[in-house]
Image 1 (cartoon, rainbow, N blue to C red):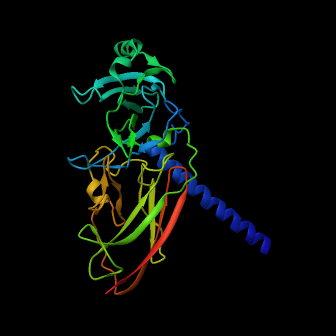
Image 2 (cartoon, rainbow, N blue to C red):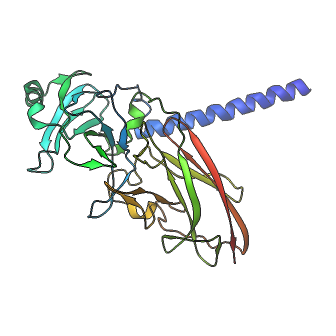
Length: 323
């Protein structure tokens, strides 16, 4: 009888695990990611990742999501196509500014690979010819060199390729999910968990009335200064079921680089050449971007987990008192 119960338990556990795996695959298929996750080669030997798609950007105008990967390079670095397909665009997308040239390739699965910050004079004539004729290029085809970037950040020159991947439904897709995994063994860091009111962090662990909980955390990829937002953030409130704040397969709105940016990030967040600091709103949801909590008086606790793209995790907890 015990053996039969054990077999039944194992069978049920396997069925649950298999069902969960199928659900995960279905979710990824729905986003167009799972089918295409074929370890595409990097366009060149990268130095580090300068920004990821969820990076907070603010250079004096409205804040916005970064949308893609900044792949840091050496000066005049040749760029090779990570995916083959049709050349569908060669454009100076910030008219008159030589730093902002794009070469875009549509692959066979319907993803558009946009290579930004290509030096215009380095784009081979065969690439222009392929655009005109509608012919395909292969993986590894030279499409130009990284433009010389005139600005420095955190003491380093910032030559880089900005790589964006756009699915056939127009959703910006996390390029990390498309590429060969990097050798990254360092987990994201949780600096602080605390309370927030009026969309701004406050001091202390006592609060009255409606409030939210915030997280200050960051990640690094092959660098020791270029702080990045984690790939996934989740929490358990008072020991209850895990809630995922966001997992960056896509951006919250999918197609817009400004939607939800000032809801997901609290006031005091910065992202520019001199400052990187991320305050995440743990109560964020697309349905109610700035929702708050009104909890019963007494002790409360939250356990927060942050995860990078290859699965390195860090968890920490915070306790507070509602008066």
